[in-house]
Image (cartoon, rainbow, N blue to C red; front, side, top):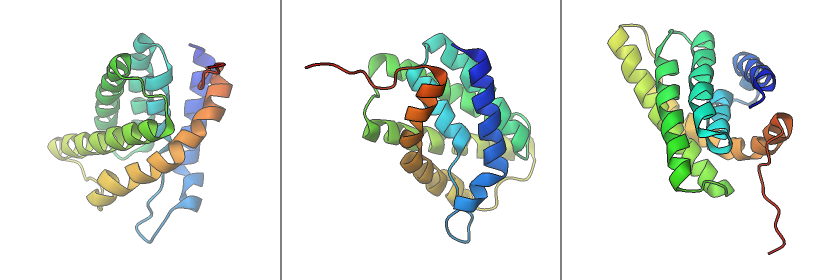
Length: 165
């Protein structure tokens, strides 16, 4: 794993998530893709399983820094990123529809666990939970697989295997 490149891409995604992603928000509910979720799924699918654990918790930490509460997203991103990396050992998640489905499932699961942990912590949570559980993961699943190719190029990871057969 190229850790300096990883740190740069996570910093860029965190800055874009806080500021620039609002431009492509849909509807008055401000539904926008979660770039850190897209990075989580990318590194869980295309990375080494041991590195996926580290990257999952690091991406969750970045999500906590830009979020309202400290801790819940790091725990939920770490757990579900690790589970996705372990699932990828068994089932190959290489095609775009499968990557989108994995992104939707992980996005909904992390949003649900984050909401539960924030509620148990006693801090204010998202006002529109349905947007966090359903619409943000759908938007991320539509946009995410198209960002995998530039992310793979930046990280020097082969995202598609070319074969003659």
